[in-house]
Image (cartoon, rainbow, N blue to C red; front, top):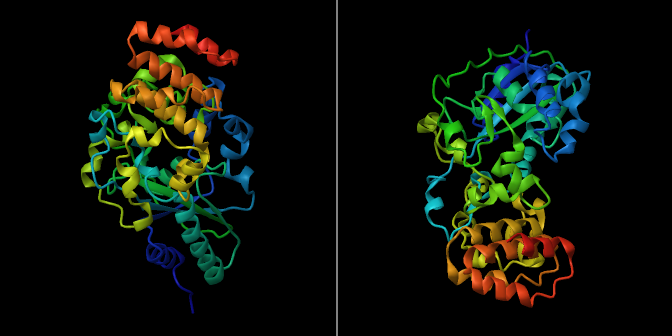
Length: 370
C-alpha cells in the first residue's frame, strides 16, 4: 500500500508550523545564478563582506555545500508591516529601523520551526535533512524562485504575488527525491520604482546591486566609517533601509505578519534619536536583546544614530552629540564631530574644534575635514 504523498504532507506540516508558503526545488541553482554571483564578487560589489568570497564555491552550488542533497524544501514566513515603512522619513527626529529588525530575530523564530519540520520529514519519510536560515552559504532567493515561491525582482530581492516583498525564507535540504515545483516567472514588467527610489543609487542596472552603495549594507555590514558621500542620503535610517521593498506595487497584496514575534515591538517602531544616542553598551544590549540589531554592536549602531542626528536639522540635539565627543569609541567620536558640523554654525563649530584635546589621529582627521 503506497505511503502518504510527501509533498502534500510536508506542505501541511509546514503550514501548521506557521509558514505561509512552501515549495520544492532540486538541490541545484538556476543556470544563471552562479554566473551572477561570480560577476558580483569579481567587481568587488560585496564590499567588506569577505565571507561571500570565502564561501563562493559552496554558495554557488548546493552540491558543494552538501553533496548528498537531492531536494530543497523552501518555506516563507510573512513579516508584512502594519504601517507604511516610508512614513517616518518625514519625521527627522525619529530613527528608522528596517521592518525585519523591529521584532524578534527572525533567525531564531524560523530555525526553531524549521527544525521541527525537518524532524517531521526525516521521521516520516526517512532520509537525512539539514536546516538553513540565511547565515549559511545558501543562495536562498534563486532556490526560492526555482521552488515557485516568488521571483527576484529588479531590486534583487524576492517578490511574491501573494505577500509582496515581505517574506523571510528558510530551507530544509534533504537526501530525499521530491518532485520539484514549477519555477516562478518574472512579473516586474516595465516597472522600475524600486530602482528609482534608492537614495544612494545602489542599483547599477535592473537586477544588479552594488552593496557598497546600499544603505542596508552601510548601516549593518560595514564596520568602519561610512563614506561621507552617502551620509546625507542615509537620512534618519539607523538600521537598514526598506525603500526599494516598500514601493513595490506587488505589496498591494501583502498582509500584516501573523507571527507575533515578527511584529514590531512598540519601542522600536518609532524610536526618538535623542533616546537612541544615549545608549551605552548595557542599555544597547537590554533594548535589542533577542533582536537582529544586537549583532552589529553598540558602537556601529550609535554611529548610525549620529549620522541621523547630523541630518535632522534639529539644534536641540547638539548637546546629545557633544556628549559623545569623549566616547571611548573613535568611530562614535568621529561621527559626533560630523553631526556637530552639520548642526552648528561655522563660528561655533570652529570654536569647539579649537578646544578639542583629541589624540586619536582618525578623529582628528574628522575635525579637519569639516
